[in-house]
Amino acid sequence: MNLKNKIFSYFYNISNNKPDYLMFFRVSIALIAIFDILSMKSDFIYFFSKDKNIIPQELLYIFSEYNGLLNPMYKYLTNNNLLDSFYAYTVIIYFISLLFLMIGLCTKVSAFVSIVLQLIIFKSIALLNFGYDHFLTMSLFYCLIFPVGSVNSVDNLIRKNKIEIKINYNKIIRIHLILVYFFAGLAKIIASSYWNGEAIWRSVSTIYNDMFRLPAIFFIMSGIATVILETFYPFLINYTKTSKITFYAIISMHVLIGLLMELPFFAAIMIVWNITAYYKYIFNEK
Amino acid sequence: MKNKLFIYFIVVHFVIILLLQSYLIISIEIGEDKRIPILSFFKENIYNKQPLNYYSQFSGINTGYGFYGINVATNKYFIIETYKKNKLIKKENLVHFKTKNGYSRFSTICSWIYNFNVETKELETKLKNKKDKDILKNEKEIVQVIKVRKMYIEKLYKYIGKNTIKTKDYDKYIVKLITVVPPKSFDEVKDKNNVYVIQEYEFKK
Image (cartoon, rainbow over all chains, first blue to last red; front, side):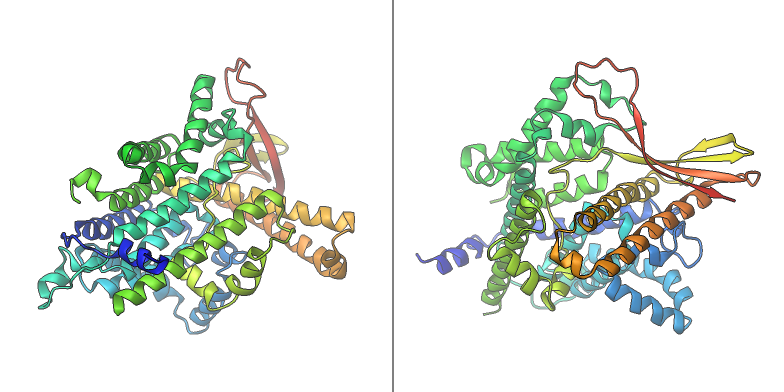
């Protein structure tokens, strides 16, 4: 079998099982984005508003790669007295589009609107971005290009002809995860600080906690385990005998990241990606 | 036919991610100034140009996965000290956020400012060494860029301090960026974390 046929046969769905992972991905991503906004609702005005910002809006994106797109947009809004309406309605419309995405109503349109508004809102505060924001953009992008609205959705209730799923979309997430963990692992494997525990110490120690009191063995073993798990993830997850345990180890790693580094939304989004990719390990599907 | 086209699109999507990540990881290791065969050409002449640049921004793939990789940084914080007639009145953290997520979100600016300062210092070093041909060609512009970058950081500190201070009875305030100091070895007996001031600015009311 040549390479082209191998690639096609890898992605094509032969079993024709109902791909519930599409619904799981759609609902989970929308919920994470909704909770993220709601959990900082009363403070968001300090980042994204006309005149209540801690730091003026333009200073938050001027040195980002999105400045070329955002600057003309804000100039247009200012010159046409639309800034008040923009700030009043953008987050509300983003919230509504996420709700529509969650229930699977006009799924493609709501996914598109969600990405556009997520980029406008969060790239307007580019200085306050972290890895989670990029993963949310990627997740919403996958909600746009995958038929996530074809399973257990309002669209499905309205639609007369059901969409036949012929591609294993969760295998796309699997490949993306392999790339994420492999390159994350490579970056760590060449850093000596992961082998002597210093990297973990730096990541978890703050002026607010007593994590620095933990025994050295915790930092050293955590660092080594992270490096091995991530760098060898492509092999461990694809080898039958280690696949399931690797899946649970990665989930545990993200739970710990969420708890110790206080990054619950980042942990949640990575756990959703992993469960979507290996839905069978949680829901006993093929 | 539609499914076949989708598979072709996904293959291209992953090839872009693979090339970008390979470029980022190698350039961090050998230095961003060094040229990498094929990957540097891809980054400068294909990835950085439209429409691929718009696609990467829209799809979210314009990020490295090496965060918390090489050179893991310590957590950083702002401390704002308010003075009246050179006497310390109050010492406080960032703006008084009502939500934990709001505080966490805003705190990411501390690391951003630190990394921005590191880049500014690298530019200053290159200017001083007078070895980089591109730097020497545009020396006057680079001097202006460094000046603007420093003014920008000072402005950020000023806004952060001004919007944190609640009291009205003060005549100056100092905004400090601090970090925790990692131990030289885990054998050190510690009662509390040592903190270190990375940068500070003083402002009059």
